[in-house]
Length: 131
Image 1: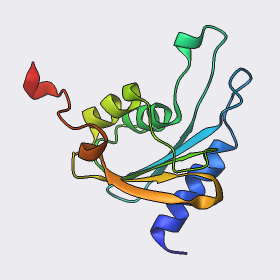
Image 2 (image 1 turned 180 degrees about the horizontal axis):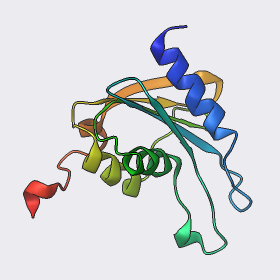
Image 3 (image 1 turned 180 degrees about the vertical axis):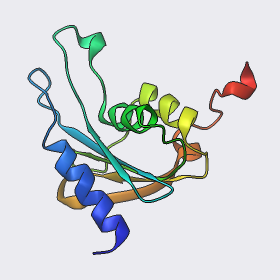
Image 4 (image 1 turned 90 degrees about the vertical axis):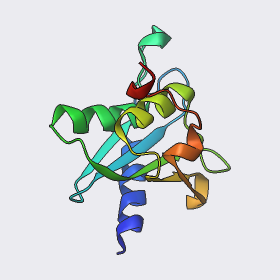
């Protein structure tokens, strides 16, 4: 199995672990480190909606909490007719930890994909250089 196919399958597997009693909207993510380690994440909801966490942020926070800081690819999967689009909060968190040129694969139902980059997802991103 090619690497990207493995990464897509990891995101789809993570999507199955989503805790979504309110929205019923499962999302999965697979963040791949420079050395090839896959950090998966799913969305985790809370009755107090503001305390919910998206799949992308779950995967990133897992990697950062393990001391990993360099990444090569992100895959996001959702139960959407077209490839899923990450929310604004996730785009900003991805921009904090991933290079603008890093590749991102968005996946919808039937494994329909769209390829993009961090920079294309969040043009004019706010970074530490803006402080």
